Amino acid sequence: MLEENERLRARLAAALTQARLLEERLNRAESAALELQQRLAAVEEERRRFAQEYLEVEQQSSNLANLYVASYQLHGTLDREDALRTIHEIVANLVGSEEMALFELDPDGDMALVSCNGIDPVPFERVAAGDGIIGRVAIDGRTHLTERDGLQGARRGEERLTACVPLCLAGRPTGVLAIFRLLPQKAGLGPLDRELFDLLSDQAAMALYCTDLHRRFTASRAH
Amino acid sequence: MARKKILVVDDSKTAMLMQLMILRKGPYDLVTASDGEEGVAKALSERPDLILMDLVMPRMNGLQAIRELRRCDSTRQIPVIVVSTRGEAESLEAGFESGCNDYLTKPIDGVALLAKVRVHLGA
Image (cartoon, rainbow over all chains, first blue to last red; front, side, top):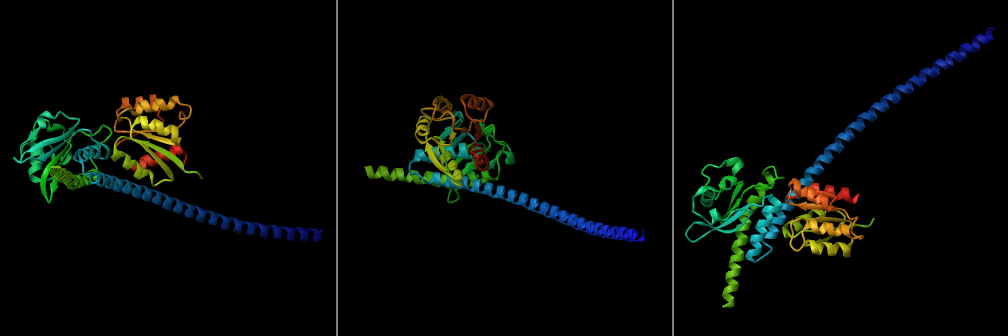
């Protein structure tokens, strides 16, 4: 009996020891699992941050592509009609408007309509310097954005103006690009559009000037 | 893995260049056409895996081209994404009725274009 009792006490002691060891292992495993969960959460957060940064870089890359394409196309031709068509395409495909008018300064100092798309040209065939928003931009050489500057002083037909961009050579206005209603899917102008306007202000003016020079040079050689 | 081939159909050189610049980032071979008629011919000869189609084009517009593609056995299954300035509901309806698989409006968002291309190419 006593021997049996001793044996059972020994077995109990061993079982209790094993239980204590198992409990310690369980506690260690739980700590390890918690640490892994925390590391997983940190990695997940880092993944989300990288994904967001990747999207931002992709967007910047897309914006730069827009500017590159606009510049490349403007200077990729010496033909005036091609240059005018390119300006139309930039406004339609990159800015998002199919209503535009392009003016150039004539010898009298007024703006003469040279090209338009999607609008009635009659009210805009000739715009006097200082007359309306287009005429004002032709003098002060400052881009007009209706969402920022309003429509004060607008002449007939300018109520639907979204933007008015001066075309400038060496800082002097040589023309104006008027952009009217945006496409329905375009909510409004963004930072990329303003960059495109800055680019058009310089590069469209230069492109039209170069194509004009080329035309005159070619014509003079023909005679 | 074989590279996927994309046919871009657009009469605007500016829009075409923009799409090519965006797509060149991916593992794609690119083929171009400048109107719907040329687009159908190139689809038959090149058998692209995906077509990006403008709508307003000379000679044959995008809707006519898509209907033509859906009539031919060899091009019927090629997915077509319309890429157009036309963003009105009527244009979207017309695009899908003619047989396009997806629709993207201009001005083109490069991130959105690549995402749609990846969806339809399974890449």
